[in-house]
Length: 248
Ligand code: SAM
View (cartoon, helix red, strand yellow):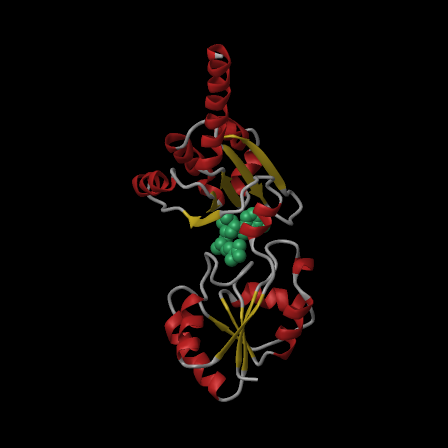
């Protein structure tokens, strides 16, 4: 009762919905979602039919006021986005903020997120990651942001829209060292899922090798600066050992 549930939904394969998400959606009095058609289709798929209210980037604050009224009246509200976890490069944060500020109960119902799925299968060994999300669409701003990210030691997690993947890779190649490892996690949990790792110098050729690649949804992971520096340190250490052995 009187709770806002922030519910993760699948990023491709509908079987990735959690049992708890289904239970919460079943008991919800209203589902706040980005796109009522998309969420309606997901609910129908699981035999659910619920009142929905559209909450997107442009009306989050007004919707929050209405949802707070509903919650004060004792309603159970589920908040979902089109795919994955609400609030992660998706609307939702403003609603959660307003509901919490009103002193009402907010409960996360965890599940799929493209960033975590991509990291989990990347094989990049690093306990730290920095979630970048979408880079700016304008070239100059994008390169400026990439320059500030360049010295970071954490793995960088970038979201990219299908039509901008080539621009994204070109910008990465302009700013980062060509030997940095990158991982493309494309169409995760979908039929044409691909996870490809290569040095940045080979990245554009890979994207362009198949016209379908410019149509998929991508997470791009970029190896952190420290790992590249470690390789340099190892080489310095090897040379130092040779010099020391010469001295003795
Ligand atoms: N809220 C979502 C999450 O938790 O991951 C992210 C939504 S954001 C609007 C959409 C972006 O997420 C896409 O452009 C892509 O970068 C990434 N994404 C979503 N689904 C994906 C998938 N199945 N495979 C690869 N990337 C995906």
